[in-house]
Image 1 (cartoon, helix red, strand yellow):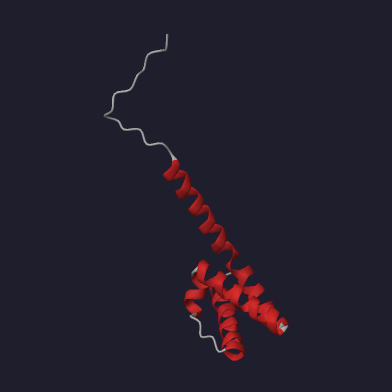
Image 2 (tube, one colour):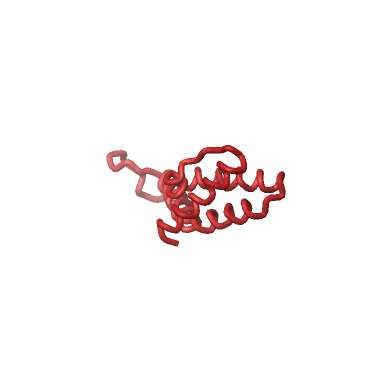
Length: 102
């Protein structure tokens, strides 16, 4: 989905949450930040479950689907950072034993 689709879906969720729960959200931030969008989807689904609101649950699912490419990108970056931080660092100036054991 394009960025415009993500913003439009986030705006729909914003309007639905404002109307049904009184919750005010940041539409633009929701369309670019995976953690914030995930939390808003969780909040919307929790409210939809308690009030049996199928429309709110559908909008939350649509936003989750729209954010999936960004979520995948974030997971890949996190995995790369974890691999980079766990790689052993070998200092160039420290002498090492190069021979063999007897």
